Amino acid sequence: MLLECNSLAKYYGRKPAVRNISLQLETGHIYGLLGPNGSGKTTWMKMVSGLVKSWKGSITYQGQPLNYRDKAEIAYMSTEPFFYSFMKIKDVGKYYRDFFADFDETRFERLLDRMELDPNDKTRTLSSGMAAKLKLAATLARDAKLYLLDEPLNGIDLVARDRIMETIVETSSPGNTIVMSTHLVDEIEGTIDGAIFVKEGEIVLAGSMEEIHAQYDESIADLYRKIYGGI
Image (cartoon, rainbow, N blue to C red):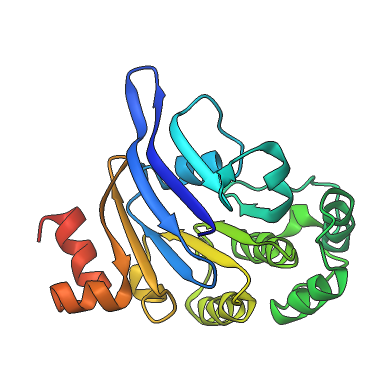
């Protein structure tokens, strides 16, 4: 078991962002963390990546309580831009290399080429879609054991989404785990092998794609509409 959460909760004042989340993530799988904006997906990812503190419950990583050293093996891609405006795209690779021992510059260059990004372009000139692709390239260029991708398809046009999903699948291996948060469920159904539906900070449905399809005989998109749209 790579990661296990038990009765995990995070409150901001009296408002729960995450409450009573218990789940297990196994190595070698791609999980979809599904739910609309404000459902708790980002807070959970930031808790696991060590960016949010003072929570209740427990997070166990590779059999031990999660600690600051585990950040070296957990690659988190946030929804917010995190590059300095004076940087060129190629500078982002140098920046990551300085911070993460598992960063592979050669892989980063290959990913830039695949994403059709010019290493000499300034980050401040990038469109939202190009910036999203740069964030993904920098994150996937790490040789991490756990990748947490927060809304990796946001701002990405339809054609580029296919390329991004292919890149994520190629990054997946028996030695790592990928979690993607999204509300664009139609785009990821053929890619994920496990789904976690979160509503108002709680898990309302979780399981392997095989288990979910066998139990409900519905697509993930149809289940999403029922859970969040009352259809």
